Figure 1 (cartoon, rainbow, N blue to C red):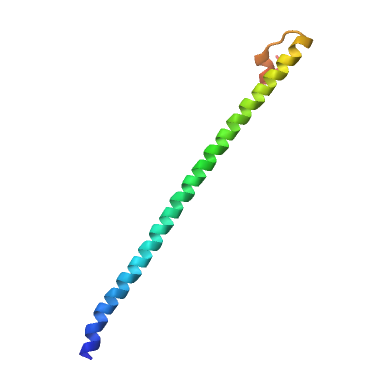
Figure 2 (cartoon, helix red, strand yellow):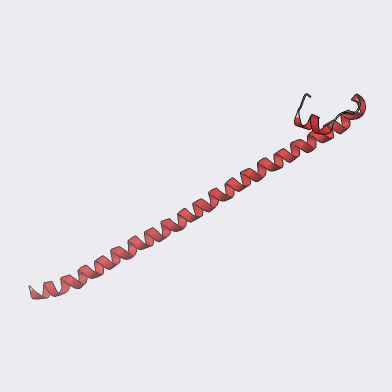
Length: 88
């Protein structure tokens, strides 16, 4: 009986440390995954904003070229007013 009690305490301590190490590893891995996720979301958001800005510039350049090509036929107009779509 004494031998079983002497072996039970160290075995229990080893089992506890093993479980603690496994849970710490899982927590560290999930933290790394979360950081990767948030950086990916941040990069995706930045890419979407950049894409919107490039699309806006592209449409403004297209409008400018369209205005230049049609301004000689219709007379002189205000490019800023036409690019904004103003009817004043």
